[in-house]
Image (cartoon, helix red, strand yellow):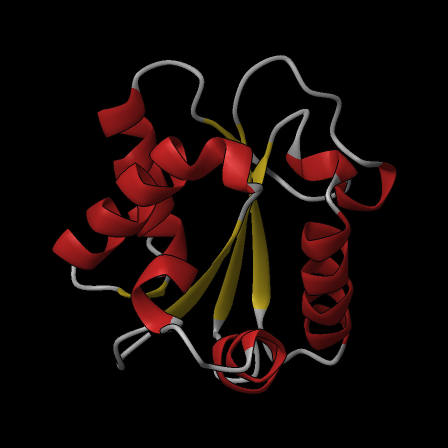
Length: 134
């Protein structure tokens, strides 16, 4: 990628700490990370900000998979949009596994990153994947 990639981060609010670390790490690596806590202000339309701005402009969709996120209706809605964009060839989906969670069936064909250990090393791996460096 020659431009700065825009990345949407999807997560369960139970995983806010790791999601914040990922978002901060991506921004520090020169990636435009769309993170709801930074982008949505009191009084904003949550649906408009997430679906019409965050997801619509994303080159890459990063989903943090945990036992909480795989049960979250919000995360499933965001993932539905991201998978359609992936099928259309508009964006990529990169799953990040945290903890002992079963990868949802529709994400099993994709390579994922396990961030349960060695966070800094796995963050670099994520950054390289976003920039499509092999």
